[in-house]
Image 1 (spheres, helix red, strand yellow):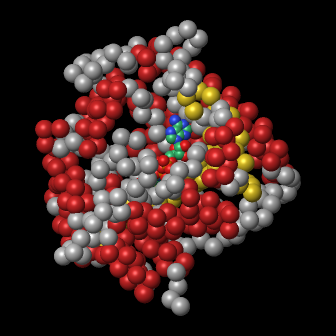
Image 2 (cartoon, protein in one colour):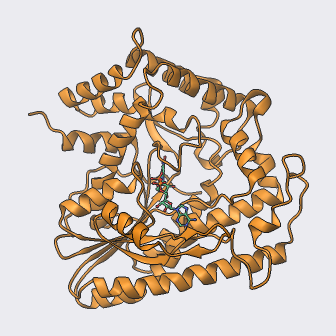
Image 3 (cartoon, rainbow, N blue to C red):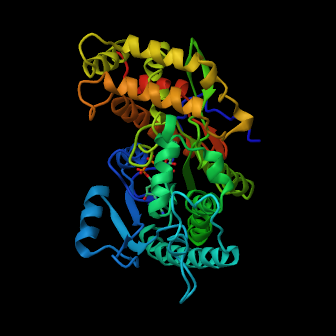
Length: 440
Ligand SMILES: NC(=O)c1ccc[n+]([C@@H]2O[C@H](COP(=O)([O-])OP(=O)(O)OC[C@H]3O[C@@H](n4cnc5c(N)ncnc54)[C@H](O)[C@@H]3O)[C@@H](O)[C@H]2O)c1
């Protein structure tokens, strides 16, 4: 079992400055967590470098970005992008002439998937092919990145990769039921994990979400050695998820979104950082709070834990600025409802015996249940309905605040070299936000 190692102070260590290089290992999306880190790197005057996962042609072949796509991505990042496709996972890989896992799964249906069996020797061969392709591409990309980091500079590698759901039609329907289904449409996450399909998905999550950090650390070893021998320093960060402490009543308590199928891969990610740390490599997984992004929108109810951040902002001395955040959130709600009403609903939800049962850190990640799906998805839908515009939710605003707070905590926390796994709970996020918005 992992020990809950929470960050309890605001780190102030300053390591990175103009001339140092920030390398984004993953792509940048509008609402993504890494925006918080990139803002810090930019403010420190660092040179920003990124990579691409590449794109797939209609026939599934992975390719680099076209000149137009490349220019657009560089414009968005505000830095150079190394155009070597770094799509992780092996769902579309196979030894020459063999079928890849997506093809091997093409026959499964909503009726048959629990009994359908996979040929594990074939799957292992596909996995080996995927790893070979990915590590080969990392090597090529790192040779380019090497040229962009001068001797004497420091480097910050920010890993964001997570994912690995294969594009198999039947699975998309299954995922919809597991993450969004209740009542008749409920589907058990345990049933998925016990099936061959589920086992394959967990393997692919491991490759994309966890093992890529190892490949990044290995692939950049030469750069690390060169920079360190010239007196420079290198840091690695990755985004973890392993539940979050939020205010329930007046106390910060650990809670989690359930069922977080990627949890096993996220624990593996923690072990990658722990092992690297023991070898003298400063790699830190920051376990971050639930926010709404392109990647998390599929998990209905994941956003419920965000609301009590408003209470944390007040508790941690947010003063007038915290009041303003309450007002912004109030203004998004329909007439006749208020943030207070929503916080009451959330408090009830958290005290409901059904959801309280899942606040079990050693048992994480637990399987879903019909009762949990009912109360969690039900509460989520009930709260969403109270907004004036379903496209402008309180959780959008709160997500952007969490991302803003996480940025400096990770940037300076990595510089301080605190440890391999750190939880950013609502207390420290609120403290950091309060420090960023002092009373005038
Ligand atoms: N959103 C949350 O609630 C939350 C909470 C804690 C941690 N995180 C973690 O934060 C990180 C960023 O996620 P986000 O929520 O900001 O969403 P995001 O969609 O902005 O980022 C997802 C990242 O994963 C990369 N990616 C996806 N599939 C990939 C593949 N097959 N190969 C290589 N890269 C791939 C994307 O390029 C992107 O950089 C992830 O590691 C995520 O697990 C998210």
